[in-house]
Amino acid sequence: MYKKKLIVANWKMNPQTLSEARRILMILEHRAPLMNKSEAVICPPALYLPAFSHYVHSVKLGAQNMHWEEAGAFTGESSPTMLKPFNVNFAILGHSERRLGLGETDQMVNVKVRSALRHKIIPIVCLGAVAKAKKTDMKKIVAKQFRATMKGIEKNELHKIVFVYEPTWAISTSLHSKPADGEHARELIMYIHKFAGPNCRVLYGGTVNKHNAREYAQYSEIDGALVGAASLDPNNFWEIIKEFERESIHRG
Ligand code: 13P
Image (cartoon, protein in one colour):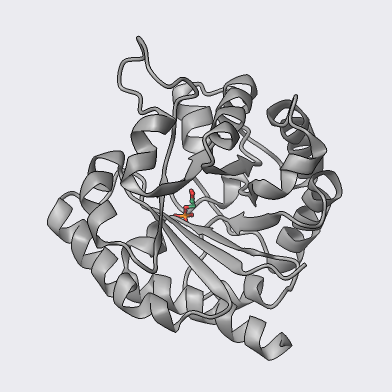
């Protein structure tokens, strides 16, 4: 099955103003029609989504989080039915900063994924976040998180989910961080495909930028990237997209 590459920008709690956010978005929106082999998804802070929903045409929108219920006593949360009218087609679920900093559990990620699927929002599920994770333990960590977060989800639904191999130690803002090398990312991504099947997309996340994007894009098994810091610089983010485009065109 032909799969377009997916390059996802996770802006986290940045940038500080809507006008700066809009500036970055408009640069990408202007360039996005040049993409053939890949798709770009921007996940801005939730407060910017209503404004962004008017500006997006070629770029897709994602939320950085989503509650599993439609409404109720859940202070500070956004529900799938609130996000949908703002052209939100994706939601990052189980990001390490929510798991490790805010106590989000596999069980919570599981109900969020099920809710996203019910509401036709594509879940982008992050695997690999454990405090003090060691490189040699990553398969065990990923297998355990996959089983727990996919509980009750039918096999024939798995292709609707995007997975990300994003080890905590590779995230640019974590202490002593070091990006995974391409070969390791490829190995873990192939490992996730063993559980998830061949048809879903599995991305790599962790310090991807214009300088190292080829390290990941060179492997056909790596279906794209989840990009943090570098995605706030539209030129840097665009270079990453171009790298995945170039490699895909090269392979034909
Ligand atoms: P960096 O690209 O800054 O390492 O962030 C990765 C990340 O957390 C994306 O979700």
